[in-house]
Length: 95
Image (cartoon, rainbow, N blue to C red):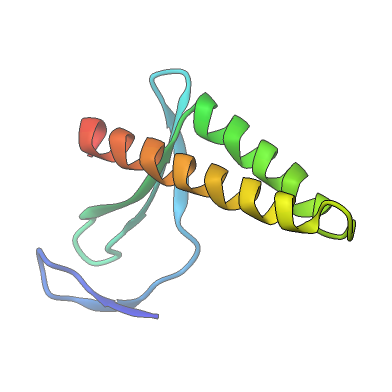
């Protein structure tokens, strides 16, 4: 994917974003313009988000069980909404 930097207008191909830990618990994932060094946030995750992601993954695995499939899909979708809400709160607070 090609990206144009808002600061220097350099166009570059997005590679793997960087992740660093801030505030002992929050992971910040971002990418950097290779020309001017401007950093762009992708997302933030805290312990709660990471736990929700693990819980969602457990429910996704349950979709293979025909007796639990419908409930598991509903539960995974509900948890995904919680994840998105929590990540939005973090971005508003930190980003």
